[in-house]
Image (cartoon, rainbow, N blue to C red; front, side, top):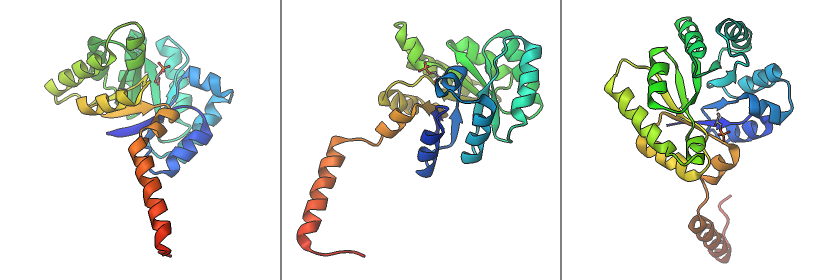
Length: 218
Ligand code: G3P
């Protein structure tokens, strides 16, 4: 399973990349707005830190403008992945861009049929939003399960399931159990994955006992 971080905050990205566990980055217009930074230079800086796919989302909703924006964004770096919304225009842009060898992430996926269309359009990634489905009383993880089954039924599909809108550490575990290819996780949740009270307690005991030996390894 690949781990992406879902943020536009460069300091978080640099810190997480330093642990060697980061395979890519996803951004969206809301995350860029939250960062308060210039979109194109932020994407360039992220691409310089993380060699894996870095999703940069188009702002337009019509095909022609999406394609013009994609042209600008994909020139920023080789690892830019163009993120398009799951609309007919977005799918048309996905088909054109992926046919041209550009990585495409089709975002705002909320149904299995939408994911089917994204795969038909040649998407590199489809982003089902787990948390936002949970927010309205539906089961986001059930959508991941359905998409996994459908994609596995058709081995000629080459689209990775990128589980997005992750809100809890259990979302990460459940997406992994189902077999999502990628999970994009906010920095705080990514760091929380390592936490277990028994690890902390066990380590405190080891440190205290080691002190009692009076020895040093280096
Ligand atoms: O990458 C987009 C997705 O992760 C959004 O998450 O928390 O705004 O629903 P959220």
